[in-house]
Every structure is written in structure tokens, then in C-alpha cells.
Length: 301
Image 1 (tube, rainbow, N blue to C red):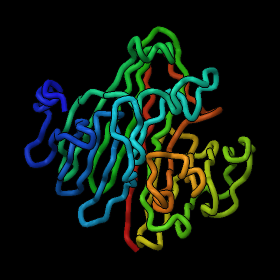
Image 2: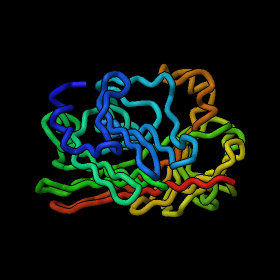
Image 3: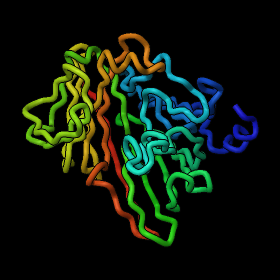
């Protein structure tokens, strides 16, 4: 970890509660150990890699083969997709899911409220980002580690023209077995099936993962529940200012093409992503803000 970076951020630390430490690959991260939860958040991508409510098991999936290195996204945790989702429509050479998940962010604040700790990190437009996207912006990822996990992604248009963007909090949830897990709350919602040429389909009943799944559920603000009979817990994901929900699992064949997935790790994860993608991209006028918020709760059963 760069000593200058470490020194400049020491003032944010809360002794015994939140420290800046050296994480995997020597990358700096904030480690939270509070009365309500423990957690980890890297400056690399403002990337959450762990959240464990007090007395509970790890909720977030992180690949054992994830590469922790500059210019590369962490596999697992909560990658931030911005300002486009998937490939960039007009530039196949652009980085998938945008450029903020693989760059170093800056620490803005650490605050304790009761037994919870909120960590905020930010990144801004510069000459490097303008090579890919001309807009001027400030993006803040504010994460509350407590008995619930709250993720807020706040975009401010700092330029003089309107901007349009896609976004996703690409949350990897840890499950005991993907074949036993079920996602509820999307019945009758239309979705784009990215494994079938983006064909529009309609969900019938609960979502069961039986093959490679990459579905963008459209025009939905509904909460979803992930039921995991193997780990005997139910995870509820609620969201605000998000009109699409993505459900993703690469399944066996696709997972083998990723060097940062270990054998069979695809069986222990599912992504449930609050997002604004496709036709539901967000327009923000000069000087205005947009904030997408996700709250994750976990209960044993």
C-alpha cells in the first residue's frame, strides 16, 4: 500500500472500529469491525468485498481466484457498473461495464452511527475518463455496514450539458447451492434474455437457475427475496431509483472461461443487481443529482 495514500487517509479512521489496512494485492481497503457487522471496502473500484452481520455468516461471494490488481475488476463482492452496462454500444474496445470498477477511488469519509459504520468513496471525471465518455461528473459510493447493508450510488452532473448513463450495483450473493436457491418477486415481469439474443420474455413464478442466466428485468422497482435452503437464510433486496434488476449466474461452461473463477465456484454465487440499464438509462441535467439506493437484509429460517 502506498505510504502517502495511507498517511493521507489516517485521519478518517475510527480506532477499533474502522481502519485503513493493506488488502489483497497490496491494495488499500477500509476494514470495519463494528457492534452490528464487519465488512471490507477497497479503494480500488470503491468495491465492497465482505459484509457479515453480527452473529451471521458471510453474505457476499468473493472468488478465491480474484485478481487484485490495478486496471482489473475484482471478481465477486459489489462491482460498480458505470456509465454503461455490459459492452459500450458504440465502442467494442471500451471496457465492459464502464471504467469506474477498475480504477482507484478516493476516501471521502467514515462515520459511525450507533452500531453501524458508513464509508463513502468518490471518483470524478478527468482526462482519462473523457477518452471513453465526454461527460463531467462526480460519483460517490456510500456504504453503511450494519445489521443491514445499505449501498448508495450518487451521481452529480458537474458539467454544463445533460448526461445519460447506465448503472448497476453488481452484487454477488453467496449461496449454499445455486441449484437449490430461488429468487422471488419478479413474477410476471418482462425481461431481456442476454443468453438468447436479448429476446424479450416474461417471468413465470420464481426464478430458478438451471443453466447460464443473464436476465435484465425491465421496469421493476420491486423488492426481491433470495431463498437459500442450504445456508438456511433468506436475503431481501430492496431498492430505490432503480427500474431494472439483473439476475446472473455464468453456469459451468461460461465460468470455465473466466481465469478468476475457481472450479465449481459458480455453484456458490448468484448476482442480483439493482440497475438502470437499456431503455431505462438515466438522464441528469447540469448541476443535478441521481441517487440509486439498495438495502440488503438477511434472516435465518
